[in-house]
Image (tube, rainbow, N blue to C red; front, side, top):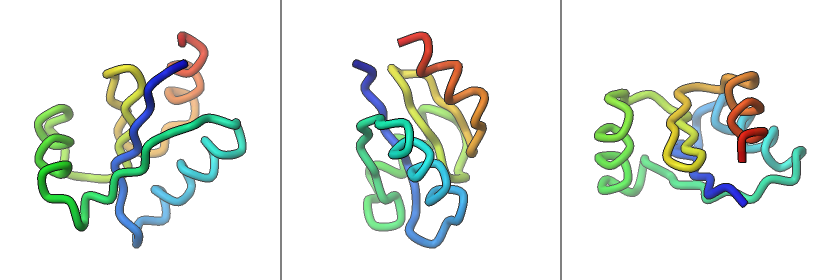
Length: 78
């Protein structure tokens, strides 16, 4: 099974959308709130070069933003 992390903030509507999408698909994921975890925020920026959320990491591949097609494509490769 894929190891999935969602870097998010509680106020981000796209973060809520991506988490709902993954739950609807029955996908387990780790939700990381970068608004309260500065080390996780630094890790996210280091991995992607981006500060925006959501960022989804599926088996070490980073998807920035709620890109449904990219997420589904990556999940199908797992």
